[in-house]
Image 1 (cartoon, helix red, strand yellow):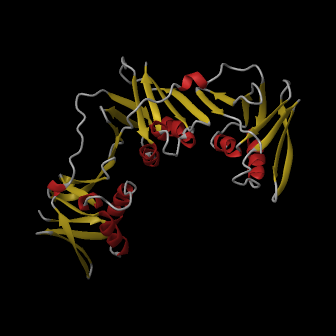
Image 2 (cartoon, helix red, strand yellow):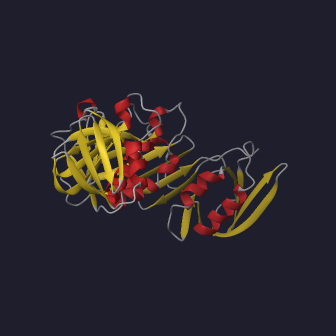
Image 3 (spheres, rainbow, N blue to C red):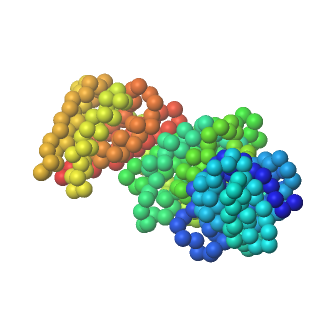
Length: 366
């Protein structure tokens, strides 16, 4: 059968999902197309930029067993402008006919044989992940990923799986976030430790897809990682290289700690951050007995100062910090109060919370 009727809403939803992989001008014409493959009463859609691939599928009311490639952007744009709830798709020679009421489009297609072949991960152990827990882990680590070019391995997320524990770590050399959570109780024993680095974009796209699933499945190959989310699959290349030994920079737990209301501290840092300039990024934090003084001075802009009640009985200390490093973590935590460990003015602030560690280095105030 060369023609099918499909709900426009389903087509738009699935093409928008695939379109997140698009990354500017494609090096090959076929890389700007979506592979559409009919498999009986199911249609599978695949889009790739060679580094990241998304596969998704929908059910259809009738049989369809044709395969072809068509421009994803043009197909999606056309569907958005059609008014009917159901569209008719018909293959004829080298064209896809899109019909809706009295409107008709004809798009060029490319043979499915020209679409890049996808990796096949056979005989690999599947790791079961709880989607809600995984989303929490990503949300607590994504902001510490390195964004420059000098440290390529730090531009991704380090994943470590050992003894049925998943650990995710990121670092931009000025701060570090690491979190560990147990795998599903139904997960078969994982005997050999697995370490791999997933590019930031792949993890963030995965995070967008984590919506209604209770469980997803992870399979790791030699240079790819495969996530199965039921009706959608995501495949990503891995970053080659060795992640630095981050355990060396995590200090032992300190006896000197201060407890502060998370929201009050966050809002104070946001206010101080209003006076930040490229050459004056640091915010001054003064730890006094049961009081934290947050202040900011920027020549030609102005000054800010605020006192916050805290629980602290240690030695008075003065720090300089990039406020964004603390804002990023405070805004994703949910606890009413947070506890920071302190060591010395030139040492990092450390937050430990139920398998999660966040470390931020101080900076010299201008």
